[in-house]
Image (cartoon, rainbow, N blue to C red; front, side, top):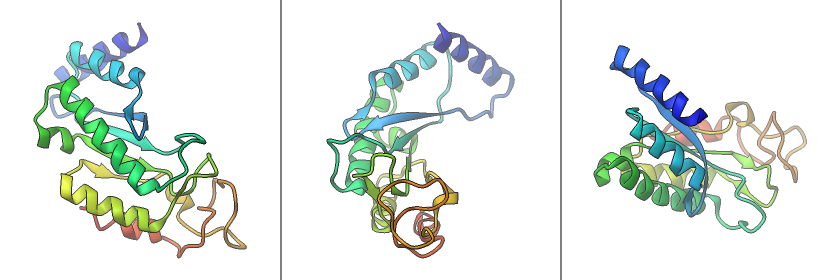
Length: 176
């Protein structure tokens, strides 16, 4: 399969370059990784890949998720940590360190979902308490207010919310 072939190629690269860090960026729901994501990690491990991080895309959950995006991201990370711990055979702390979170800032593609600056601040506190691998955002280009203010839909060039320029970068920058 494509996953097995990719995993074998990555494992070979890691044998040749022992310091090569490999992370997988995967879709997630508040309940955790999809089964395809779990299968990809399991396949990679069984083919000898040393996985440094699993970066979850905490965004675009669908129309039935219209609550607090910071809380959904925490739930997704918590569920992913348990999956990573099980699949990769890691300790609690090692599993937390291997989880990274990338939310879509501002209005998401699913318009009912809006990740606000206070969600970023909430996520930083969570990341510090758990020792997460890293926090990121989709995308730095969007870390500013749209001309004319808030919008009801996602925009590739701005967050579609009222915010100061760079507010998400500043909030996420508090996590070192």
